[in-house]
Image (tube, rainbow, N blue to C red; front, side):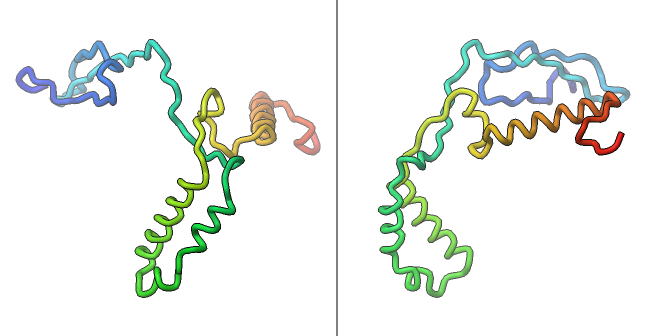
Length: 146
């Protein structure tokens, strides 16, 4: 703190998330001070706004048709790689928007990547159990001899 002015900032995306900001003394011999603050919990949990592609309802025939209508040889002629990629990506995203509907993700599944499935979760669970056993000094049947 210099001449009574706090120089540090606590940045958030919502003003109500941080409260009780206090200065807690100097940090050693420097002129820096420790800033203590409390992160407040939201009273009401916000609904997820995550969306994902609804591939089960996609019209891939129309998607293929839209991309097939583009004369790629003429469109990409004389362009550098980055410019060609940007052009292709633009066409791809336009076709995706027209042919593949989106759906809102909700609940626990909204926090997991789309590729997480039950088989993978079971393997991760088994790995964690084996590690816990190893830390305690137990040898599981998968350890080999012992």
